Amino acid sequence: MPRNGKGTSFRGLTHLSPGGDARMVDVSAKPETAREAVARARLKMLPATLRAIREGNAPKGDVLGVARTAGVLAAKRTSELIPLCHPLPISQVEVEIAPDHQLPGLIVRASVKVTGATGVEMEALTAVSVACLTIYDMAKAVERGMRIEGIRLLEKRGGKSGPYRAKGT
Image (tube, rainbow, N blue to C red):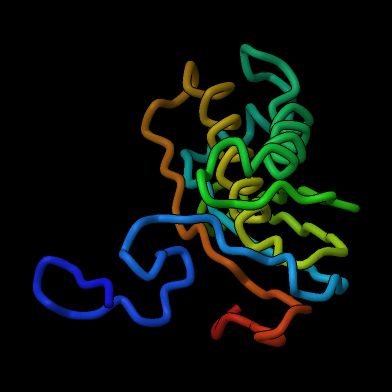
């Protein structure tokens, strides 16, 4: 039985072989079902930075358009970035970016759909992460103190484990 350095078993961790080695989970026997995941992140910034991004005055151009595209591309390439993720035939990715003047900053939300044998939670999380990193990269000349926060899965549907919805969303 696999054990961590303290003698506790890793029972229930599907990405570990019986010998305790990292492995890609075999999903070949699982039925293909419709699956969807939604993730969210926040990017906090100064009001002046938010204004520059919204007005299109950031030095590198259309920050929000490029970030949405980067999020879509990131979702499609998640298996190249996260070693044990399966490559998936993604059917839809939506990346939405909305201002939040209370932060102040931006709320980035990604929804990913697939019909497959495994879920798309990692793809949604990767999409919001890379969209936020793209915003940071394109606006860092205006403000280097921006903070990416609260990256989380909001909900998922489909698959054996059933639906999930994060509390407080």
